[in-house]
Image (cartoon, rainbow, N blue to C red; front, side, top):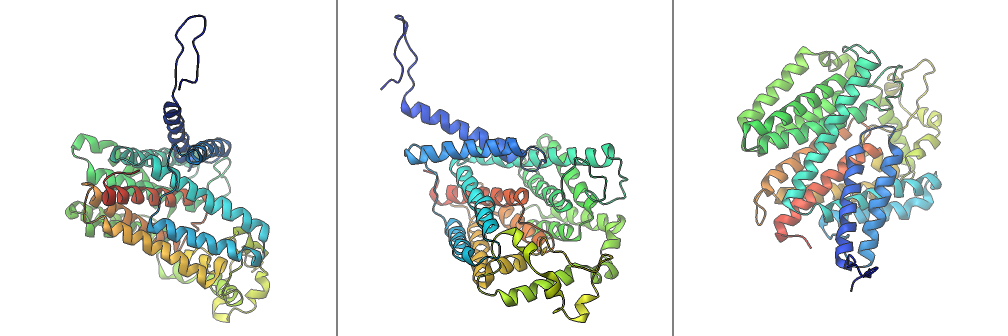
Length: 427
């Protein structure tokens, strides 16, 4: 039935309930796209919050009134929900219950909801391509702004490590966020370059690839550079353009040899790395909380008595101490395996590994296309990108909101391709 009536004898515009649902769904796509695009940028938190909550409220409303789907049933979703259940079960035993409750929502439920919204809205081949390019342009725009602001506006020298030092001003972005965002942009640009059918279509993607790759090396982050090698090597092994990818691999080796990164890869720098002391300390923490962990909340690390744990560390580990006060402060263990185990125990680690396994199982199934002709392309990208992100997470903090959005965006792209390949369409 029509929801509006003619006035003064003039015909009124009639909008059906179905038409209104379509319009509201378009708003969901618009606002979640804004949220994803602005994700890497600092100082736009209010806009991102509005974009997320508007898209979430509308999507939940449409789902509640059975106008649009929201929940998807996949092996990855089931693994995510099992891990979520364990995080909730262990919350009463957390050393910081308030922060654990906050982080379960802010760093898990929230992103699973974003994942659901993206999977059910970008559910066609054309929208999947749009999503990938939206994320690429987001990473590229952020890196361009970051390079300009850090090196030109703040006046840092190009020999200095990107996003470090005291003159950060309004930059407001940690080095691992810059590095992993640049790496993700490099991965997306590689996908687009490999899939471009015309040389003219590769120009922008080549520029984006070069800029993001330069940013990765400007950070001089060993972990992220190693992770990029993992991605390129995997992509080269699985894709059909191996000669081109071999050239990229040679380029990476030359960049390592000819840039200051080579000094950070020396045995002296590796042996003296403070991460070894952090790992030793976290091993003692895990011994005390093997089943439930210290709690999912990231602030739980700050509640640890690091001095007491430090006294348990062997003399061999203590030689890695840094700082004039010789005290250890842990905000993140810089290793996702150790971090998950410390926060949720060995049960939580097993459930988190089931998420990893489910992703790779679904991703590898795309290498043999069924109903979706481009499935192999997305499978190669998903598997190698996730391997790269996991490799980066062995050395860098990855449980921060801006990086987690990248993870769940990758989850979304792989799931969309998987559903297209297994069902031929989405409902």
